[in-house]
Image 1 (cartoon, rainbow, N blue to C red):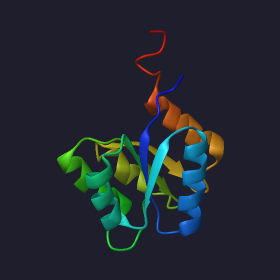
Image 2 (tube, one colour; image 1 turned 90 degrees about the horizontal axis):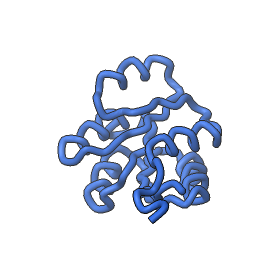
Image 3 (tube, one colour; image 1 turned 180 degrees about the horizontal axis):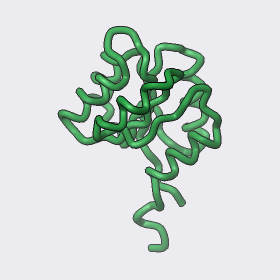
Length: 126
């Protein structure tokens, strides 16, 4: 059994936030959403997520900059989502982005990325 994660989803498009929230909730994770990079940073302080799933292109502060800000205070793995082809190169050097997913993200891709981070529950078999 995979452990339940606290996941923060950030995207400036409401439909995309709701799509990710629905998929992750169905997988058993607790999900909080943010509509931009500044909200992402504030929500991370309040929610202390195990994982951040964020769009790259957002108003105010992009997802990569917001993830860097969050990781100055507390290490949190980040899955970056983008429709821009050059983002993966920029994200690879950040140190906190563990995966880049290209839009549109398929359910199986998201599940695999999150499961790789969730791993088995430490209490399994006890």
